[in-house]
Image (cartoon, rainbow, N blue to C red; front, side, top):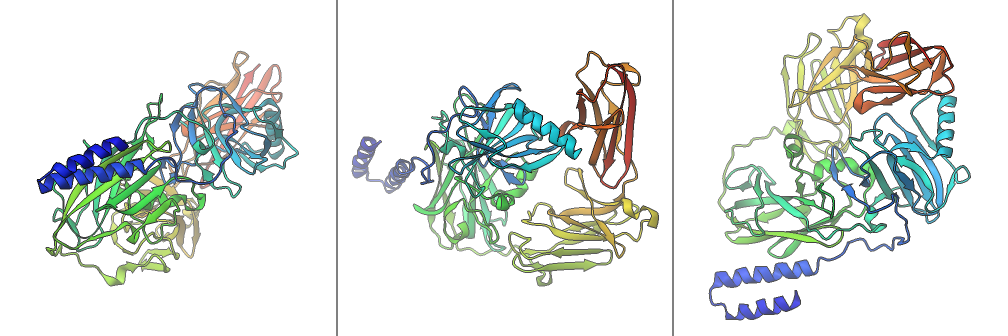
Length: 581
């Protein structure tokens, strides 16, 4: 690379044409940037003696800080190809937490190591035999399938290389894999590739560039609207006219050897006229600020398209600490009549890079887009904000918003119990919860305990919110703007037996399997019984599936199985059948 740069500089001296000289300078500057962009940003001395959590080559199908729905991915997904692969402790420590849930990580286990770091393993099929026996005994003791228990170091100490469980597909998982995390002693997720070597010599891909007006007066190509430009080569030739405060965004992906999936890149650098104005790197993050991802990304395009654009802009209430350097929140003021060179350089954690350069033509021409704001509707992010109209109240605590907004409101035809209320814009993300209250005056008194609030999104999907009725208003906490209305849920869940029927001989089966759905308020709780005794019935939420694996609660001969399922407002369904073993 250094010798190549010497040749370029020698060629530069021979050039006469000013445009050629400018282009050559840009190429040299970009190559220098790439040369200086090697290795990772984190400077901590992480342990280098961790064993692998799985045997064989580690194949990452989802990497650290991947841009997920409303959160960053807290670890890496290790592809297993099948269920039942052994999971090993990477170093000495003890089992410090066991959590089982219907969704999320499903069967999960946490190890605290002697060096203070914590490793997490999710979506397991089963725990090791000793741990599995303890877990089942605890479930029977509590009469609960779901559990979240902290343990001290005396219960299950582990040694490096010891089997702690087996890979699976439990919880919110859609294929066999292990979710693997490494956390520091403060509980913050770290990039696991600091601890484990993963083969990767493939450069990232830059797929899209985005450009955004940052005020009502600024514009891109004479419109007060953002644009996206597909990246087909390392230097874009598009004519881009800008005026006023502008910020940029990039859609980029990383690829690893022997894995076909595309992952989130490790770091992003943005330059304007060779000045670094934005620099972010994914070394670690804090779960408390995980929802700030919605401020970092292009939220509307994430919702309405498959694009995952990372905005090089930091909103006032965005508290992520991925940002290594940010000038003026990532906003650049274009207020001259010059052409400016913009450069993005992205890298993976191994130092493989990809870059793109493009020009923007700044202009001083002023345009009036006729945008007028009602100052009475200004919601400031650092203040409490309220809004009230007949039949509806909105209460936004301080710092619910990422940025100031001019609140929007409208009313449409809804259900027989209330109008449909437009609460601002569903494509504006929220950092935290606000309280939405809708009058229940249209609901008969005897049905008020069945009242729920539904939110309708742009795809005509519905989300249900449960709350409490007080002073004839149903109040719920929500973290989404959009269309809301009131309805009631008087329909109990529907239970469908899959492999059992009354009087069936189940001698050749290993379990009883059923499905259950609830269309409005969702399944809240359930309980299974064999011969009148409580038994462990697993609920896999993603598949609406319940199953009971035969154990010592089942006797030879005739048995009676019963499943009770309760929805969010207390409607109950029961399935009961006799079976033989």
